[in-house]
Amino acid sequence: MPSGHILFDEGVLAHVVGADRRAYMVFEIDILGTAGRLKILNNGHRTELWEAAASTQDSEDRALQFKGVVHEGDEGDRILDELSDIVRCVESGGEPACSGRDGRAAVEVTAAFLKSLDTGREVALPLKGKDLRRAIPFREVL
Image (tube, rainbow, N blue to C red):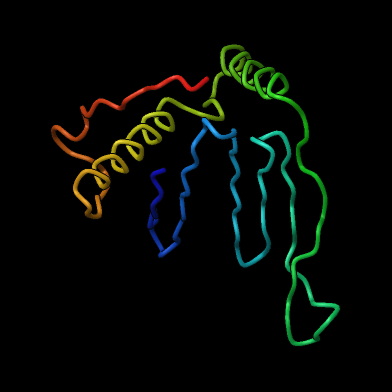
């Protein structure tokens, strides 16, 4: 399955690892930063917060300590949250938590991954010209 890297501004590097959904569904995000770690687990059904603090093992080191569960629930909860956000925007204005620009950026990153797979080369964003119109294959996995 396709895997790759995304290099963000300021040198932040993301590793993306693809999985074959025919075997099983897995979606996880693990964000590591200087202040701690945010883990999105169980296909987005659980989010944990870990904080970097003085190690109990070695006074010179810092270690991650579990702070708590930020979110736990099923997909229905997320859909209700999304609908509530849309209602908030309609009633009082403002930007939704996930805008059209966010969606476009996600599609652009996907198209860049596909181009990189085709060419075996790094692809810079933003995409330009015909690369912006690249068809992204969709395959339903049962």
